[in-house]
Image (cartoon, helix red, strand yellow):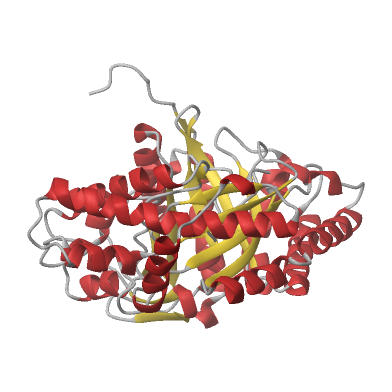
Length: 458
């Protein structure tokens, strides 16, 4: 372990204290990744028991260590979470009922060790389904309804394999079903379900976190936040041209990332688990002053969503990555700027004022960290329309060799002008208008969109 090589100066500490006290800097999450592949037994019940025991044994001190670091260093650590091996990888041969047993074991283990979310009720189906994948997908609506802390993700495409449109077709229906099963909570289950293209294996952010097949036995990954810090830096320099502004953001991201590196290495040492990566993402919250939209508007946009928003976001995303990469030896995860609607007060306001539409959000996902995130849509939206939204977003990821995702909530019984209320970090959002024309015949074709050619770029 190379903890001894990491140092931080007194000036850096004082600067960090200021960021924490006035600019909403926090460590968004310490996420412990746990490999559960050795938990497989001959039955679902026995496998569930092994999974529960391994998670509790491995993560028993996670919350306590995180709390202690928070007190000792004065750095807010908002979430302590767990990600596990995609459950479908160890569930082949099991049916839906068995998968539910594994999912409830995750939920019970999360409650036992005190984390608020556990990710990994997941399947990687970018090229096709195994029987275990299908059983897991069928179990998603029930586990997200009855399992309080379980999060689920499905990877339906990547640049090398293309897009599994059978999975896209299926996930439209699963999202609808999940929304209906959790309709008494505005479709809350869908806030815990992500559909990915080009999913990464070391993402510490929920709901899409899982411990990928290429990861070690266990690891500690850190997700940093800090929109308020970047916002403050941008506001201080209204005179700078965009090149100078990019440099200011880069330097700010460097300082933020140093804090994440420090917390990650201390947590790693105390838990006896290898340090994995720092995810350089700017992750907003519904709190005023902690908004990615506010940063874009401070750069000069009248309202986020107007012309220029994609360019401004591209500058921000790139500068954050460049600054963070200088500050940490191990950068990974999603890294960039998140643009969720319900979790960002500025984005919510832009939707309300008609500046930000679903089409502009999609355009902005070409340059952001992930994709269409935490967007509430009318409850009567057909499954094939949801599938088409997933297909569009996956196509952006596949062609551009980047991660994209869809976390969308068709709120039962609600329409444009209504609101969904989730509370906490998941926030609240107005229902956004969709295109009224049907993509049904296109989606019903299913099959697989071939992988794109990697040469002949233009």
